[in-house]
View: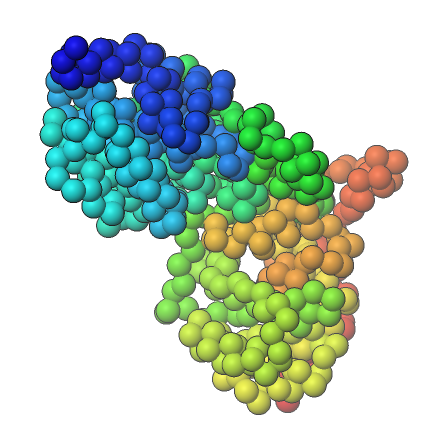
Length: 467
């Protein structure tokens, strides 16, 4: 039998039974598709669907599958339709893009694929004699914008900026294929990503147009029972997102309503060099010190910087502050007055006013102000401030741990307690705070007029301001 005839029979088998192509490519490794993966392959090659979402745990084979699907389109499918197919695989990080291309290059060494390659493969791209190519890139404007392709595969999409995710659709304009498949693990720190929004919003991304595939790490045959048992010791959010592929975000705050908090999170919050800034610094006792800087523009407050300093020595913290404070136009910084010796250092080392605030005394009023800004969606928090957001989502009125960034943020809002004193806020919309359910939920009612009036009676830092 001639090699051309044999190749034709092989190509027909690959076309009729797509999973056979996967098994051929990874024969040496003895890989085969899981039942979950086979459903995706059937959708990609046997259905008319052209929009797909894969939400999965870690280590389920997303990258390997996307690399192999790309090779299939560039060879088997392109040869069948007689037109070159341009495949672009976008990854959420440089390492991920390299892993993808490594899989592509490894798969390209098999005889069927190797015979069709046009020229030596590069680090990011393989060209084929039929006009196809498979290219792996990191998600960036430089790499993505301007490229028009036939098949777009987006790997670890939760890591990718929303602006680039939004641009994915236009990359397929004009293609007769126009296939878009997006996959990611919905880790808690990426809960507010565009990918999770797409996965959860079935109104804007309806299931009849966007096929959804859920892959669990626990279902993978290569995962040991002992590994699953160890993973179950993780927090609920970590286990469900990283192992079960279920977007999960812990939310139990009775200070920051979750739906409104979600609306406050923006992809980017830009620092405005023409505006002054106010900072809050939490010295930390049993938790890391933290700095939050915010700017006010109109009725909104913008978080332009936030950072924890871990176990960094105080001398190095001072050096860090000496860089960040002038860089962000900070005119005033508020700290907990319980550390007068550290406040004295700040006053001598920083080019701004430094005030000590009796935090325990002022905390209720600061909670009122911060809660109001979130409730009215007048606080802007960058998506990158995921640690701050996670703290806010579980923050309670009596929280005293894992709240360093929230405390620093509230200190940065100290001056906001001087305005709108007549505002009345009732937390969790509880009309009757004396019910057993309300007590159980730790609900409470804030009357800001009274709290702020009392606060002004013991506003210790005013004396420091005069001095």
